[in-house]
Length: 237
Image (cartoon, rainbow, N blue to C red; front, side, top):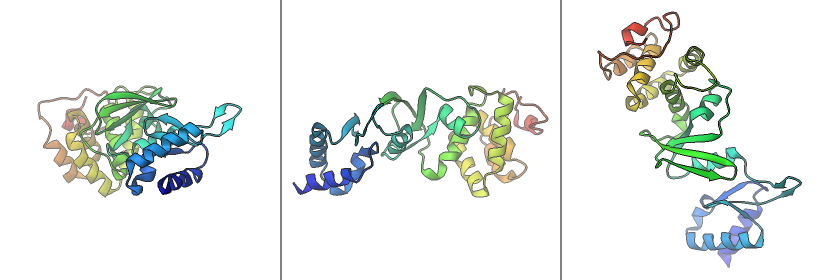
């Protein structure tokens, strides 16, 4: 009974439409009792089930029950044990590389590839060799964008490159070093492009990337000499 009252109390403190997950109650250290209470409260109408392990307090409006926003759902997913980062067009849009809005949000992380629908949000999970923490999210999104530079919808290679160059040049030295470290698991094209972009400002860091590349391999990207004067040294075309 005490457990039930505590769970109910916490839910009542939630605003209508706010997402409720099991993480809210992990300090209670009794998953079975929490789960049973949530199911009971769902039957009473106090909460509604959005997806497995996800509930919310409904608020009736003329458009129906007020549900959690897509942003709240993503935030909750990224806090789970299988941490990850938002990738794909959603991330590229946030970086200012495209104005296109995707129908499916991509999350890269320690996940088995699969699709999942939560509310109206369609999510595609994909496997990433690099586990994300909040500190590295922006860096990994930039690496993802470089890897996908030739196929970002709603833009072209030149515009995407100019925007990426500005973003990377604005990174701090610490961020650049972490980016070089994380890039070790990226594709060769990404490593070559990053190395070329940071060569003038951080020559030692760029050489770390150069040593990982095959000297006989060329990278077809489509960037002009004017935009990337040192591209020949990095076998970029």
